[in-house]
Length: 215
Image 1 (cartoon, rainbow, N blue to C red):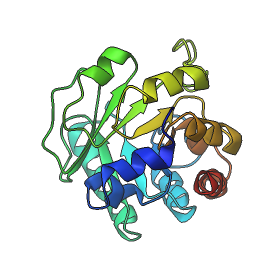
Image 2 (spheres, one colour):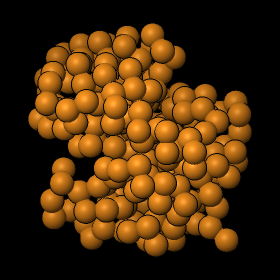
Image 3 (cartoon, helix red, strand yellow):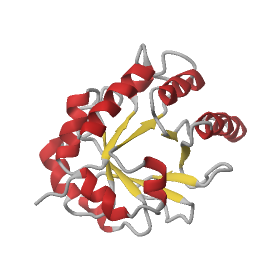
Image 4 (cartoon, helix red, strand yellow):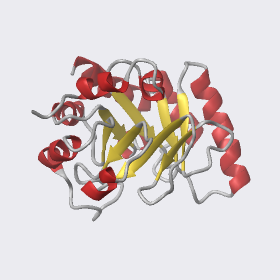
């Protein structure tokens, strides 16, 4: 039987970094993309946090190092006010303690470690990661042509291969899709374009979280 998102979450243990960051219920991970954002990235992230987001992955790898570090400090302060956590894409946490690694990046000793996975081989190489993203689950407007999409059946097969909590990523734009990902065994969903492009990021996040919490 494919494990549910809650079963995967419970297996992580109440004191581990994953559970401390994302809570006892199904989680939402927001990924940044300033090029898709309808407002400044800081404003969009602040609105997402207002809507309930508590974990944000800072991408923006093309920014100069100093500018990206300053942005990380700003976003980290926004999240800290609500007990949230900024996760930095790449091996350098930019003054923090949480990283999100690419599939090919070496292992990290950061306090919270996530990793992007796309194939069974990626899952087989996991070591000390606290969570992974699996993508693309659905066709993604943010990355047209990227795929092929796993679909919920493919997501379920991949989730069954690992005890590491999985966030479904790619083309998740609606509460119904989020619920379908949980039913397939994901611990939560990761969203980028749906929040970055939203006219009301707070409302978008709130609607996704309401469905995720309901299961």
